[in-house]
Length: 243
Image 1 (cartoon, one colour):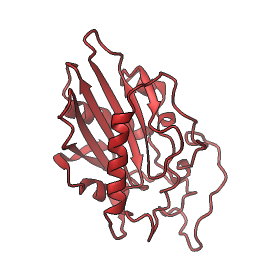
Image 2: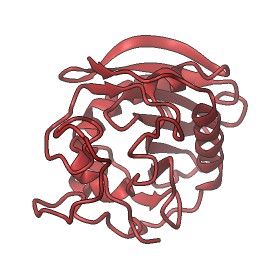
Image 3: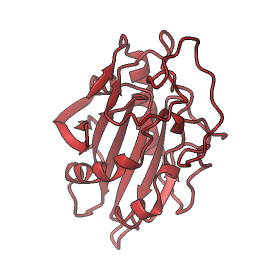
């Protein structure tokens, strides 16, 4: 993987971990059409208005937030959103609009989909999907998150237990499967995979509840390669959304 290095800090990591954990617990009720406002030109071939960049920004670098270059496989290690500031910290788009029904319904068999936050959220955004509930209330959920926290910082969170590293996701992209200390403490069992991106990191979490016959870590390995190609791969796709 290609990298762009900057000094790490734990501040962004702690915030991201807390917000993502809270969102996974809070986003329970889902509707089939509650995707949230679509990001401005997130999935469009049009050319959205350029955003300001600092003087001296190198064209087509990760700092060039107006670049149309495909940065699949580029992994940033930006971790301090103050000095230096990750240029994507305040422009994380909604995730659900990147995931079409041809993926979520046809391939993943998810019947309900909802954005993780009602308004635009700095640092991270997520999309949560679930299957229909079975006769014994069993279900499977998938949460897809993108965040301006580096892969290195996410991997260093103390309550993460690594299950497997270098898991193939797509060309030039591998991820780490992990569990958190709370993933197996309720009737819903969770497993996660995270990988580095030019803006920070992306992750997929699978939850299996109430007797649904599936192993979450097997499912997260299966689903991540299907989901990853739909997520932002070019800086031009990273655009803030009105709440």
